[in-house]
Image 1 (cartoon, rainbow, N blue to C red):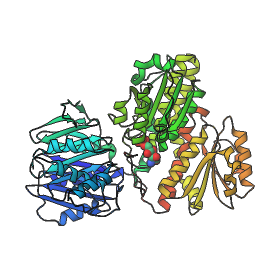
Image 2: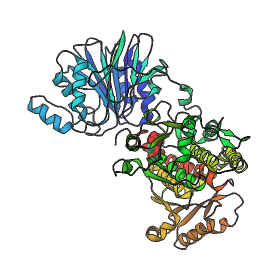
Image 3: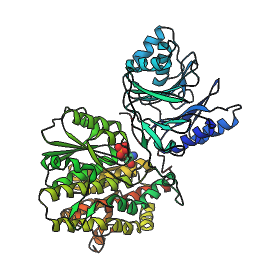
Image 4: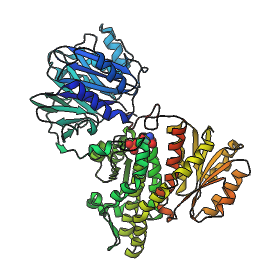
Length: 608
Ligand code: M6R
Protein backbone atom coordinates (compact mmCIF):
# COMPACT_ATOMS: atom_id res chain seq x y z
CA UNK A 1 0.00 0.00 0.00
CA UNK A 2 1.22 3.56 0.55
CA UNK A 3 4.94 3.95 1.21
CA UNK A 4 6.92 6.44 3.31
CA UNK A 5 10.58 7.49 3.19
CA UNK A 6 11.97 10.45 5.10
CA UNK A 7 15.59 11.51 5.53
CA UNK A 8 17.56 13.86 7.75
CA UNK A 9 21.34 13.86 7.55
CA UNK A 10 24.21 15.07 5.38
CA UNK A 11 23.47 13.41 2.02
CA UNK A 12 21.52 15.09 -0.82
CA UNK A 13 17.95 14.16 0.12
CA UNK A 14 16.36 14.39 -3.35
CA UNK A 15 18.20 11.42 -4.89
CA UNK A 16 18.00 9.37 -1.71
CA UNK A 17 14.23 9.83 -1.44
CA UNK A 18 13.58 8.94 -5.09
CA UNK A 19 15.76 5.84 -4.73
CA UNK A 20 13.84 4.93 -1.56
CA UNK A 21 10.48 5.37 -3.32
CA UNK A 22 11.66 3.07 -6.12
CA UNK A 23 12.36 0.38 -3.54
CA UNK A 24 8.80 0.77 -2.25
CA UNK A 25 7.17 0.66 -5.70
CA UNK A 26 6.36 -3.03 -5.38
CA UNK A 27 3.93 -2.28 -2.57
CA UNK A 28 1.44 -0.80 -5.05
CA UNK A 29 0.50 2.88 -5.46
CA UNK A 30 -1.06 5.31 -7.91
CA UNK A 31 0.73 8.65 -7.28
CA UNK A 32 3.86 9.90 -5.58
CA UNK A 33 5.30 13.05 -4.07
CA UNK A 34 8.15 14.53 -2.08
CA UNK A 35 8.88 17.55 0.07
CA UNK A 36 12.32 19.02 0.64
CA UNK A 37 13.18 21.28 3.56
CA UNK A 38 16.05 23.73 3.16
CA UNK A 39 14.81 26.76 5.03
CA UNK A 40 11.92 26.78 2.63
CA UNK A 41 9.37 24.02 1.92
CA UNK A 42 9.31 22.69 -1.64
CA UNK A 43 6.78 20.06 -2.69
CA UNK A 44 6.62 18.14 -5.98
CA UNK A 45 3.87 15.61 -6.81
CA UNK A 46 2.96 13.44 -9.78
CA UNK A 47 0.22 11.02 -10.70
CA UNK A 48 1.34 7.55 -11.80
CA UNK A 49 4.75 5.99 -11.45
CA UNK A 50 7.73 7.23 -9.41
CA UNK A 51 9.43 7.75 -12.80
CA UNK A 52 6.90 10.55 -13.47
CA UNK A 53 7.82 12.20 -10.18
CA UNK A 54 11.51 11.77 -10.93
CA UNK A 55 11.07 13.49 -14.31
CA UNK A 56 9.21 16.38 -12.68
CA UNK A 57 11.81 16.71 -9.94
CA UNK A 58 14.57 16.82 -12.57
CA UNK A 59 12.85 19.80 -14.21
CA UNK A 60 12.36 21.68 -10.92
CA UNK A 61 15.10 24.19 -10.05
CA UNK A 62 16.86 24.56 -6.71
CA UNK A 63 15.69 21.32 -5.11
CA UNK A 64 18.71 21.00 -2.85
CA UNK A 65 18.31 19.85 0.73
CA UNK A 66 19.64 17.37 3.25
CA UNK A 67 16.24 16.74 4.71
CA UNK A 68 12.96 15.65 3.16
CA UNK A 69 10.03 13.27 3.10
CA UNK A 70 8.47 11.28 0.27
CA UNK A 71 5.44 9.11 -0.28
CA UNK A 72 3.74 6.71 -2.67
CA UNK A 73 -0.06 6.94 -2.36
CA UNK A 74 -2.63 4.18 -2.88
CA UNK A 75 -5.86 6.15 -3.04
CA UNK A 76 -8.42 5.61 -0.29
CA UNK A 77 -10.07 9.02 0.28
CA UNK A 78 -10.32 11.05 -2.89
CA UNK A 79 -9.36 10.24 -6.48
CA UNK A 80 -5.93 9.73 -7.98
CA UNK A 81 -4.99 13.39 -8.48
CA UNK A 82 -1.95 15.55 -7.80
CA UNK A 83 -3.64 17.59 -5.06
CA UNK A 84 -4.63 14.38 -3.27
CA UNK A 85 -1.06 12.97 -3.47
CA UNK A 86 1.18 13.40 -0.39
CA UNK A 87 2.94 15.28 1.22
CA UNK A 88 0.06 17.40 2.55
CA UNK A 89 0.24 20.68 4.42
CA UNK A 90 -2.20 22.53 6.63
CA UNK A 91 -3.76 25.69 5.15
CA UNK A 92 -0.99 27.87 6.66
CA UNK A 93 1.80 25.66 5.18
CA UNK A 94 3.26 25.47 8.67
CA UNK A 95 2.81 21.70 8.94
CA UNK A 96 3.88 19.17 6.28
CA UNK A 97 3.01 15.51 6.58
CA UNK A 98 3.05 12.11 4.86
CA UNK A 99 0.65 9.43 6.07
CA UNK A 100 -0.11 5.73 5.53
CA UNK A 101 -3.42 4.44 6.86
CA UNK A 102 -6.91 5.84 7.30
CA UNK A 103 -8.12 8.46 9.78
CA UNK A 104 -11.60 7.09 10.41
CA UNK A 105 -13.06 10.14 12.17
CA UNK A 106 -11.68 12.60 9.59
CA UNK A 107 -15.16 13.83 8.56
CA UNK A 108 -16.06 14.89 12.13
CA UNK A 109 -12.65 16.49 12.63
CA UNK A 110 -12.91 18.30 9.29
CA UNK A 111 -16.29 19.76 10.28
CA UNK A 112 -14.97 21.01 13.63
CA UNK A 113 -11.83 22.47 12.03
CA UNK A 114 -13.88 24.14 9.26
CA UNK A 115 -16.09 25.75 11.91
CA UNK A 116 -12.90 27.18 13.42
CA UNK A 117 -12.10 28.75 10.06
CA UNK A 118 -9.55 26.25 8.75
CA UNK A 119 -9.72 25.58 5.01
CA UNK A 120 -9.08 22.43 2.97
CA UNK A 121 -7.95 21.96 -0.61
CA UNK A 122 -8.01 18.18 -1.05
CA UNK A 123 -10.41 15.30 -0.46
CA UNK A 124 -8.02 13.43 1.82
CA UNK A 125 -8.17 12.38 5.44
CA UNK A 126 -4.44 13.19 5.62
CA UNK A 127 -4.93 16.91 5.04
CA UNK A 128 -7.35 16.86 8.00
CA UNK A 129 -4.63 15.36 10.21
CA UNK A 130 -2.09 17.98 9.05
CA UNK A 131 -4.63 20.72 9.84
CA UNK A 132 -5.48 19.23 13.23
CA UNK A 133 -1.78 19.21 14.16
CA UNK A 134 -1.53 22.82 12.97
CA UNK A 135 -4.56 23.78 15.05
CA UNK A 136 -3.14 22.16 18.19
CA UNK A 137 0.38 23.58 17.69
CA UNK A 138 1.37 25.90 20.53
CA UNK A 139 5.12 26.12 19.99
CA UNK A 140 6.11 22.43 20.38
CA UNK A 141 5.58 20.14 17.37
CA UNK A 142 6.12 16.93 19.34
CA UNK A 143 3.35 17.91 21.77
CA UNK A 144 1.06 18.99 18.92
CA UNK A 145 1.46 15.60 17.19
CA UNK A 146 0.86 13.71 20.44
CA UNK A 147 -2.26 15.79 21.13
CA UNK A 148 -3.61 15.30 17.60
CA UNK A 149 -3.06 11.55 17.71
CA UNK A 150 -5.03 11.37 20.95
CA UNK A 151 -7.99 12.76 18.99
CA UNK A 152 -7.91 10.50 15.95
CA UNK A 153 -9.28 7.01 15.44
CA UNK A 154 -8.04 4.70 12.70
CA UNK A 155 -4.60 3.69 11.52
CA UNK A 156 -1.56 5.81 10.83
CA UNK A 157 2.12 5.82 10.13
CA UNK A 158 3.19 9.45 9.75
CA UNK A 159 6.17 11.73 9.39
CA UNK A 160 5.55 15.37 10.30
CA UNK A 161 7.55 18.58 9.83
CA UNK A 162 6.85 22.06 11.18
CA UNK A 163 8.30 25.26 9.69
CA UNK A 164 8.96 26.65 13.21
CA UNK A 165 11.26 23.67 13.99
CA UNK A 166 12.80 23.15 10.55
CA UNK A 167 15.52 20.70 11.66
CA UNK A 168 13.14 18.23 13.31
CA UNK A 169 10.92 15.35 12.16
CA UNK A 170 8.24 13.73 14.25
CA UNK A 171 7.17 10.20 13.26
CA UNK A 172 4.46 8.06 14.81
CA UNK A 173 2.50 4.91 14.20
CA UNK A 174 -0.60 2.96 15.03
CA UNK A 175 -1.41 0.06 12.76
CA UNK A 176 0.82 0.76 9.75
CA UNK A 177 4.47 -0.28 9.90
CA UNK A 178 7.19 2.37 10.37
CA UNK A 179 10.91 1.92 11.02
CA UNK A 180 13.68 4.33 11.92
CA UNK A 181 17.11 3.56 10.44
CA UNK A 182 20.03 4.89 12.49
CA UNK A 183 23.04 5.90 10.40
CA UNK A 184 26.12 7.94 11.07
CA UNK A 185 24.71 11.41 11.75
CA UNK A 186 21.66 10.54 9.67
CA UNK A 187 18.23 8.96 10.12
CA UNK A 188 15.93 7.34 7.59
CA UNK A 189 12.31 6.74 8.46
CA UNK A 190 10.54 4.26 6.19
CA UNK A 191 7.51 2.03 6.04
CA UNK A 192 9.62 -0.85 4.71
CA UNK A 193 13.20 -1.87 5.56
CA UNK A 194 14.07 -2.13 1.85
CA UNK A 195 14.26 1.69 1.76
CA UNK A 196 16.67 1.73 4.72
CA UNK A 197 19.19 -1.08 4.20
CA UNK A 198 21.17 0.64 1.46
CA UNK A 199 22.15 3.27 4.07
CA UNK A 200 22.22 1.49 7.42
CA UNK A 201 21.33 -1.87 8.95
CA UNK A 202 20.73 -0.49 12.47
CA UNK A 203 17.06 0.24 12.97
CA UNK A 204 14.09 0.07 15.28
CA UNK A 205 10.41 -0.43 14.56
CA UNK A 206 7.99 1.99 16.13
CA UNK A 207 5.32 0.29 18.24
CA UNK A 208 1.65 1.27 18.19
CA UNK A 209 0.94 4.69 19.75
CA UNK A 210 4.66 5.53 19.82
CA UNK A 211 6.07 8.85 18.66
CA UNK A 212 9.68 9.65 17.84
CA UNK A 213 11.28 13.09 17.64
CA UNK A 214 14.33 13.08 15.36
CA UNK A 215 17.00 15.72 14.81
CA UNK A 216 20.47 15.31 13.27
CA UNK A 217 21.84 14.93 16.81
CA UNK A 218 19.61 12.14 18.06
CA UNK A 219 16.12 10.93 18.78
CA UNK A 220 13.67 10.52 21.64
CA UNK A 221 10.75 8.06 21.70
CA UNK A 222 7.59 8.46 23.72
CA UNK A 223 3.95 7.43 23.69
CA UNK A 224 1.17 9.71 22.51
CA UNK A 225 0.66 10.41 26.24
CA UNK A 226 4.27 11.59 26.41
CA UNK A 227 5.59 8.69 28.49
CA UNK A 228 9.18 7.91 27.60
CA UNK A 229 9.80 4.51 25.91
CA UNK A 230 13.01 2.73 24.85
CA UNK A 231 12.98 1.26 21.37
CA UNK A 232 14.61 -2.12 20.66
CA UNK A 233 17.33 -1.45 18.11
CA UNK A 234 17.87 -4.42 15.75
CA UNK A 235 20.11 -5.45 12.91
CA UNK A 236 18.27 -5.52 9.57
CA UNK A 237 19.07 -8.66 7.61
CA UNK A 238 18.26 -8.06 3.99
CA UNK A 239 20.42 -8.67 0.96
CA UNK A 240 19.56 -5.94 -1.54
CA UNK A 241 20.65 -8.23 -4.39
CA UNK A 242 17.72 -10.47 -3.54
CA UNK A 243 15.42 -7.62 -4.46
CA UNK A 244 16.97 -7.15 -7.94
CA UNK A 245 15.33 -8.58 -11.09
CA UNK A 246 18.53 -10.06 -12.54
CA UNK A 247 17.93 -11.79 -15.88
CA UNK A 248 14.18 -12.14 -15.37
CA UNK A 249 11.58 -10.01 -17.09
CA UNK A 250 9.26 -9.86 -14.09
CA UNK A 251 9.57 -10.38 -10.35
CA UNK A 252 6.66 -12.81 -10.41
CA UNK A 253 8.44 -15.07 -12.88
CA UNK A 254 11.68 -14.80 -10.91
CA UNK A 255 9.87 -15.73 -7.72
CA UNK A 256 8.05 -18.66 -9.34
CA UNK A 257 11.39 -20.06 -10.50
CA UNK A 258 13.04 -19.36 -7.14
CA UNK A 259 10.68 -21.79 -5.38
CA UNK A 260 12.89 -24.91 -5.41
CA UNK A 261 15.76 -23.10 -3.70
CA UNK A 262 13.48 -21.04 -1.51
CA UNK A 263 11.92 -24.22 -0.09
CA UNK A 264 15.34 -25.83 0.38
CA UNK A 265 16.11 -22.86 2.62
CA UNK A 266 12.76 -23.24 4.40
CA UNK A 267 13.59 -26.89 5.20
CA UNK A 268 17.28 -26.39 6.02
CA UNK A 269 18.11 -27.52 9.55
CA UNK A 270 14.47 -28.30 10.29
CA UNK A 271 14.25 -31.90 9.02
CA UNK A 272 16.02 -34.41 11.30
CA UNK A 273 15.78 -37.75 9.51
CA UNK A 274 17.83 -39.62 12.15
CA UNK A 275 15.33 -38.89 14.88
CA UNK A 276 12.36 -38.73 12.52
CA UNK A 277 11.42 -35.33 13.87
CA UNK A 278 10.91 -31.80 12.72
CA UNK A 279 12.98 -29.15 14.51
CA UNK A 280 11.19 -25.82 14.88
CA UNK A 281 13.27 -23.64 17.19
CA UNK A 282 10.75 -20.81 16.99
CA UNK A 283 8.01 -22.79 18.75
CA UNK A 284 10.13 -25.09 20.96
CA UNK A 285 9.39 -23.02 24.07
CA UNK A 286 5.70 -23.83 23.68
CA UNK A 287 6.00 -27.52 22.72
CA UNK A 288 3.95 -28.69 25.72
CA UNK A 289 1.18 -26.18 25.07
CA UNK A 290 1.04 -27.24 21.42
CA UNK A 291 0.64 -30.90 22.28
CA UNK A 292 -2.14 -30.02 24.73
CA UNK A 293 -3.89 -27.80 22.17
CA UNK A 294 -7.55 -28.69 21.68
CA UNK A 295 -8.06 -26.62 18.54
CA UNK A 296 -6.02 -24.67 16.01
CA UNK A 297 -7.56 -21.62 14.34
CA UNK A 298 -5.66 -20.49 11.26
CA UNK A 299 -6.35 -17.00 10.06
CA UNK A 300 -5.15 -14.95 7.09
CA UNK A 301 -6.26 -13.15 3.93
CA UNK A 302 -5.85 -13.79 0.20
CA UNK A 303 -3.20 -16.26 -0.86
CA UNK A 304 -2.09 -16.69 2.74
CA UNK A 305 -5.66 -17.80 3.55
CA UNK A 306 -5.44 -20.50 0.88
CA UNK A 307 -2.19 -21.71 2.43
CA UNK A 308 -3.88 -21.62 5.85
CA UNK A 309 -6.75 -23.74 4.48
CA UNK A 310 -4.21 -26.35 3.43
CA UNK A 311 -2.78 -26.05 6.95
CA UNK A 312 -6.24 -26.83 8.34
CA UNK A 313 -6.39 -30.03 6.26
CA UNK A 314 -2.81 -30.97 7.22
CA UNK A 315 -3.33 -30.51 10.95
CA UNK A 316 -6.42 -32.72 10.94
CA UNK A 317 -5.10 -35.28 8.43
CA UNK A 318 -1.54 -35.68 9.77
CA UNK A 319 -1.64 -34.45 13.38
CA UNK A 320 -5.28 -35.42 14.16
CA UNK A 321 -5.91 -32.14 15.90
CA UNK A 322 -9.15 -30.17 15.27
CA UNK A 323 -8.42 -27.18 13.07
CA UNK A 324 -10.39 -24.46 11.35
CA UNK A 325 -9.43 -21.71 8.99
CA UNK A 326 -11.07 -18.34 8.71
CA UNK A 327 -10.74 -15.01 6.95
CA UNK A 328 -9.09 -12.72 9.50
CA UNK A 329 -11.48 -9.92 8.48
CA UNK A 330 -14.44 -12.07 9.58
CA UNK A 331 -12.84 -13.66 12.62
CA UNK A 332 -11.93 -10.33 14.20
CA UNK A 333 -15.51 -9.06 14.28
CA UNK A 334 -17.63 -12.14 14.87
CA UNK A 335 -17.15 -12.45 18.62
CA UNK A 336 -15.25 -15.75 18.29
CA UNK A 337 -15.28 -18.31 21.09
CA UNK A 338 -11.77 -19.21 22.15
CA UNK A 339 -11.71 -22.34 24.32
CA UNK A 340 -9.03 -23.33 26.79
CA UNK A 341 -5.79 -24.55 25.20
CA UNK A 342 -6.60 -22.91 21.88
CA UNK A 343 -3.89 -21.96 19.42
CA UNK A 344 -4.31 -19.28 16.77
CA UNK A 345 -1.96 -19.27 13.78
CA UNK A 346 -1.63 -16.04 11.81
CA UNK A 347 -0.30 -16.72 8.30
CA UNK A 348 1.15 -13.76 6.43
CA UNK A 349 3.93 -13.03 3.95
CA UNK A 350 4.35 -9.39 4.93
CA UNK A 351 3.46 -9.74 8.59
CA UNK A 352 1.67 -6.40 8.24
CA UNK A 353 -1.82 -7.28 6.91
CA UNK A 354 -4.17 -5.17 9.03
CA UNK A 355 -7.00 -7.71 9.32
CA UNK A 356 -4.66 -10.61 10.13
CA UNK A 357 -2.93 -8.55 12.80
CA UNK A 358 -6.28 -7.52 14.33
CA UNK A 359 -7.58 -11.13 14.31
CA UNK A 360 -4.40 -12.24 16.03
CA UNK A 361 -4.79 -9.57 18.70
CA UNK A 362 -8.45 -10.51 19.21
CA UNK A 363 -7.53 -14.18 19.73
CA UNK A 364 -4.67 -13.26 22.09
CA UNK A 365 -6.96 -11.04 24.14
CA UNK A 366 -9.31 -14.01 24.49
CA UNK A 367 -6.51 -16.21 25.81
CA UNK A 368 -5.22 -18.12 22.77
CA UNK A 369 -1.57 -18.98 22.28
CA UNK A 370 -0.54 -16.98 19.20
CA UNK A 371 1.75 -18.44 16.53
CA UNK A 372 2.99 -16.68 13.40
CA UNK A 373 3.84 -18.18 10.02
CA UNK A 374 5.46 -15.11 8.54
CA UNK A 375 8.06 -14.24 5.91
CA UNK A 376 9.23 -10.74 6.82
CA UNK A 377 11.53 -10.94 9.83
CA UNK A 378 10.73 -8.44 12.58
CA UNK A 379 7.37 -7.50 11.02
CA UNK A 380 4.49 -6.51 13.28
CA UNK A 381 2.79 -9.93 13.27
CA UNK A 382 6.14 -11.61 13.94
CA UNK A 383 6.63 -9.32 16.94
CA UNK A 384 3.08 -9.67 18.26
CA UNK A 385 2.96 -13.48 18.31
CA UNK A 386 4.09 -15.64 21.25
CA UNK A 387 6.13 -17.85 18.92
CA UNK A 388 6.43 -18.63 15.25
CA UNK A 389 8.19 -20.09 12.26
CA UNK A 390 9.67 -17.90 9.55
CA UNK A 391 9.25 -18.92 5.89
CA UNK A 392 12.81 -17.93 4.89
CA UNK A 393 11.84 -17.64 1.20
CA UNK A 394 13.52 -14.24 0.78
CA UNK A 395 11.86 -10.95 -0.20
CA UNK A 396 8.74 -11.32 -2.34
CA UNK A 397 8.37 -8.27 -4.57
CA UNK A 398 5.71 -9.32 -7.12
CA UNK A 399 2.25 -8.34 -5.89
CA UNK A 400 0.96 -11.79 -6.80
CA UNK A 401 2.20 -14.05 -4.04
CA UNK A 402 3.91 -17.24 -5.27
CA UNK A 403 6.98 -18.37 -3.33
CA UNK A 404 5.41 -17.17 -0.08
CA UNK A 405 2.45 -19.51 -0.74
CA UNK A 406 4.63 -22.60 -1.14
CA UNK A 407 6.74 -21.42 1.82
CA UNK A 408 3.63 -21.07 3.98
CA UNK A 409 2.39 -24.52 2.99
CA UNK A 410 5.86 -25.97 3.64
CA UNK A 411 5.96 -24.47 7.15
CA UNK A 412 2.42 -25.61 7.93
CA UNK A 413 3.32 -29.12 6.74
CA UNK A 414 6.30 -29.11 9.10
CA UNK A 415 4.10 -27.82 11.92
CA UNK A 416 1.61 -30.67 11.34
CA UNK A 417 4.44 -33.23 11.30
CA UNK A 418 5.97 -31.66 14.42
CA UNK A 419 2.64 -32.07 16.20
CA UNK A 420 2.01 -35.58 14.83
CA UNK A 421 5.41 -36.87 15.94
CA UNK A 422 5.02 -35.39 19.44
CA UNK A 423 1.52 -36.81 19.79
CA UNK A 424 1.55 -40.28 18.25
CA UNK A 425 3.53 -40.73 15.03
CA UNK A 426 6.42 -43.21 15.06
CA UNK A 427 9.90 -41.98 14.08
CA UNK A 428 9.75 -44.40 11.14
CA UNK A 429 6.45 -43.12 9.74
CA UNK A 430 7.43 -39.52 10.29
CA UNK A 431 10.86 -40.00 8.64
CA UNK A 432 9.16 -41.53 5.60
CA UNK A 433 7.03 -38.43 5.06
CA UNK A 434 9.96 -36.15 5.84
CA UNK A 435 12.05 -37.87 3.16
CA UNK A 436 9.26 -37.11 0.69
CA UNK A 437 9.06 -33.54 1.98
CA UNK A 438 12.77 -33.04 1.30
CA UNK A 439 12.17 -34.07 -2.33
CA UNK A 440 9.45 -31.46 -2.91
CA UNK A 441 11.91 -28.80 -4.23
CA UNK A 442 13.12 -31.33 -6.87
CA UNK A 443 9.51 -32.05 -7.85
CA UNK A 444 8.85 -28.32 -8.20
CA UNK A 445 11.90 -28.05 -10.45
CA UNK A 446 10.40 -30.75 -12.65
CA UNK A 447 6.96 -29.12 -12.66
CA UNK A 448 8.60 -25.86 -13.82
CA UNK A 449 9.90 -27.63 -16.92
CA UNK A 450 6.35 -27.62 -18.31
CA UNK A 451 6.59 -23.82 -18.65
CA UNK A 452 6.44 -23.61 -22.46
CA UNK A 453 3.69 -26.25 -22.70
CA UNK A 454 1.68 -24.26 -20.13
CA UNK A 455 2.22 -21.11 -22.17
CA UNK A 456 0.86 -22.84 -25.30
CA UNK A 457 -2.23 -24.04 -23.40
CA UNK A 458 -2.87 -20.54 -22.08
CA UNK A 459 -2.40 -18.97 -25.53
CA UNK A 460 -5.40 -20.96 -26.78
CA UNK A 461 -7.74 -19.78 -24.03
CA UNK A 462 -6.66 -16.47 -22.61
CA UNK A 463 -9.18 -14.48 -24.63
CA UNK A 464 -11.94 -16.23 -22.66
CA UNK A 465 -13.28 -14.01 -19.87
CA UNK A 466 -14.61 -16.69 -17.49
CA UNK A 467 -12.67 -19.62 -16.06
CA UNK A 468 -13.40 -22.22 -13.39
CA UNK A 469 -10.86 -23.93 -11.11
CA UNK A 470 -12.03 -27.13 -9.44
CA UNK A 471 -10.54 -29.59 -6.98
CA UNK A 472 -11.37 -31.78 -4.00
CA UNK A 473 -9.64 -32.23 -0.64
CA UNK A 474 -6.20 -30.61 -0.60
CA UNK A 475 -6.89 -29.50 -4.16
CA UNK A 476 -9.84 -27.31 -3.21
CA UNK A 477 -7.65 -24.54 -1.68
CA UNK A 478 -5.24 -25.04 -4.60
CA UNK A 479 -8.17 -24.37 -6.97
CA UNK A 480 -9.00 -21.19 -5.03
CA UNK A 481 -5.39 -20.09 -5.32
CA UNK A 482 -5.31 -20.81 -9.08
CA UNK A 483 -8.41 -18.65 -9.57
CA UNK A 484 -7.06 -15.82 -7.41
CA UNK A 485 -3.74 -15.77 -9.29
CA UNK A 486 -5.48 -15.62 -12.65
CA UNK A 487 -7.92 -12.86 -11.73
CA UNK A 488 -5.49 -10.59 -9.90
CA UNK A 489 -2.96 -10.25 -12.71
CA UNK A 490 -4.78 -11.14 -15.95
CA UNK A 491 -8.14 -9.55 -14.94
CA UNK A 492 -9.94 -12.65 -16.23
CA UNK A 493 -12.94 -13.54 -14.10
CA UNK A 494 -12.14 -16.85 -12.42
CA UNK A 495 -13.80 -18.82 -9.67
CA UNK A 496 -12.37 -21.62 -7.60
CA UNK A 497 -14.57 -24.13 -5.80
CA UNK A 498 -14.81 -27.68 -4.52
CA UNK A 499 -15.43 -29.86 -7.59
CA UNK A 500 -18.57 -31.34 -6.00
CA UNK A 501 -20.10 -27.90 -5.40
CA UNK A 502 -20.38 -27.31 -9.12
CA UNK A 503 -23.58 -29.36 -9.39
CA UNK A 504 -25.22 -27.08 -6.84
CA UNK A 505 -25.40 -24.12 -9.17
CA UNK A 506 -22.18 -23.11 -10.93
CA UNK A 507 -22.62 -25.86 -13.57
CA UNK A 508 -25.23 -23.57 -15.13
CA UNK A 509 -22.31 -21.35 -16.20
CA UNK A 510 -20.68 -24.01 -18.35
CA UNK A 511 -20.95 -23.18 -21.99
CA UNK A 512 -19.12 -24.25 -25.09
CA UNK A 513 -15.38 -23.96 -24.64
CA UNK A 514 -15.38 -22.46 -21.14
CA UNK A 515 -11.93 -23.21 -19.65
CA UNK A 516 -12.36 -25.45 -16.58
CA UNK A 517 -9.13 -26.27 -14.79
CA UNK A 518 -9.33 -29.48 -12.74
CA UNK A 519 -6.60 -30.23 -10.21
CA UNK A 520 -6.82 -33.94 -10.79
CA UNK A 521 -3.62 -35.52 -9.55
CA UNK A 522 -3.75 -38.99 -7.98
CA UNK A 523 -5.22 -39.01 -4.49
CA UNK A 524 -8.04 -40.31 -2.34
CA UNK A 525 -10.75 -38.56 -4.35
CA UNK A 526 -9.31 -39.11 -7.82
CA UNK A 527 -12.24 -41.22 -9.08
CA UNK A 528 -14.78 -38.70 -7.90
CA UNK A 529 -12.89 -35.90 -9.66
CA UNK A 530 -12.98 -37.96 -12.86
CA UNK A 531 -16.78 -38.07 -12.56
CA UNK A 532 -16.87 -34.28 -12.14
CA UNK A 533 -14.71 -33.91 -15.24
CA UNK A 534 -17.20 -36.05 -17.21
CA UNK A 535 -20.06 -33.84 -16.05
CA UNK A 536 -18.37 -30.64 -17.23
CA UNK A 537 -17.12 -32.19 -20.46
CA UNK A 538 -20.58 -33.40 -21.45
CA UNK A 539 -21.80 -29.80 -21.17
CA UNK A 540 -19.15 -28.46 -23.50
CA UNK A 541 -16.58 -27.19 -20.97
CA UNK A 542 -12.95 -27.21 -22.12
CA UNK A 543 -11.07 -29.36 -19.61
CA UNK A 544 -7.53 -28.43 -18.59
CA UNK A 545 -6.32 -31.10 -16.18
CA UNK A 546 -3.37 -30.92 -13.80
CA UNK A 547 -2.55 -34.62 -13.56
CA UNK A 548 0.03 -37.02 -12.18
CA UNK A 549 2.81 -38.11 -14.54
CA UNK A 550 1.98 -41.55 -15.91
CA UNK A 551 -1.80 -41.06 -15.74
CA UNK A 552 -2.51 -41.85 -19.38
CA UNK A 553 -6.22 -42.41 -18.80
CA UNK A 554 -6.81 -38.74 -18.18
CA UNK A 555 -5.77 -37.88 -21.74
CA UNK A 556 -9.07 -39.36 -22.93
CA UNK A 557 -11.10 -37.10 -20.69
CA UNK A 558 -9.24 -33.78 -20.76
CA UNK A 559 -8.67 -31.46 -23.72
CA UNK A 560 -5.33 -30.30 -22.33
CA UNK A 561 -3.21 -32.06 -19.71
CA UNK A 562 -0.37 -30.56 -17.67
CA UNK A 563 1.54 -33.25 -15.83
CA UNK A 564 3.21 -32.87 -12.43
CA UNK A 565 5.40 -35.40 -10.60
CA UNK A 566 3.80 -37.99 -8.32
CA UNK A 567 3.89 -36.65 -4.76
CA UNK A 568 2.16 -38.00 -1.59
CA UNK A 569 -1.24 -36.33 -1.37
CA UNK A 570 -0.61 -34.14 1.75
CA UNK A 571 2.51 -32.70 0.11
CA UNK A 572 1.01 -32.25 -3.35
CA UNK A 573 -0.30 -28.62 -3.06
CA UNK A 574 3.28 -27.29 -3.19
CA UNK A 575 3.64 -28.97 -6.61
CA UNK A 576 0.15 -28.75 -8.16
CA UNK A 577 0.06 -24.98 -7.62
CA UNK A 578 3.13 -24.45 -9.87
CA UNK A 579 1.31 -24.85 -13.24
CA UNK A 580 -1.47 -22.57 -11.95
CA UNK A 581 1.03 -19.83 -11.10
CA UNK A 582 2.58 -20.15 -14.57
CA UNK A 583 -0.85 -20.12 -16.24
CA UNK A 584 -1.72 -16.84 -14.54
CA UNK A 585 1.68 -15.37 -15.39
CA UNK A 586 1.45 -16.23 -19.09
CA UNK A 587 -2.18 -15.06 -19.35
CA UNK A 588 -1.22 -11.66 -17.88
CA UNK A 589 1.80 -11.26 -20.18
CA UNK A 590 -0.16 -12.29 -23.29
CA UNK A 591 -2.96 -9.87 -22.37
CA UNK A 592 -0.37 -7.11 -21.98
CA UNK A 593 -0.74 -6.38 -18.28
CA UNK A 594 1.79 -5.10 -15.77
CA UNK A 595 2.40 -8.45 -14.07
CA UNK A 596 4.22 -7.12 -11.01
CA UNK A 597 1.97 -4.12 -10.41
CA UNK A 598 -1.60 -5.16 -11.16
CA UNK A 599 -4.22 -2.43 -11.18
CA UNK A 600 -5.82 -1.46 -7.86
CA UNK A 601 -3.68 -3.89 -5.87
CA UNK A 602 -1.08 -3.38 -3.18
CA UNK A 603 1.55 -5.80 -1.94
CA UNK A 604 0.58 -5.51 1.67
CA UNK A 605 -2.85 -4.39 2.78
CA UNK A 606 -2.22 -2.32 5.87
CA UNK A 607 -5.71 -0.84 6.11
CA UNK A 608 -8.85 -2.87 6.75
O1 M6R B 1 1.20 -10.27 3.39
P1 M6R B 1 0.08 -11.23 3.52
O2 M6R B 1 0.46 -12.65 3.20
O3 M6R B 1 -0.63 -11.16 4.84
O4 M6R B 1 -0.97 -10.79 2.40
C1 M6R B 1 -2.23 -11.39 2.30
C2 M6R B 1 -2.88 -11.03 0.98
O5 M6R B 1 -3.08 -9.66 0.89
C3 M6R B 1 -2.04 -11.50 -0.22
O6 M6R B 1 -1.80 -12.87 -0.17
C4 M6R B 1 -2.78 -11.16 -1.54
O7 M6R B 1 -3.95 -11.91 -1.65
C5 M6R B 1 -1.88 -11.39 -2.75
N1 M6R B 1 -2.05 -10.33 -3.70
C6 M6R B 1 -2.18 -12.64 -3.46
O8 M6R B 1 -1.36 -12.85 -4.57
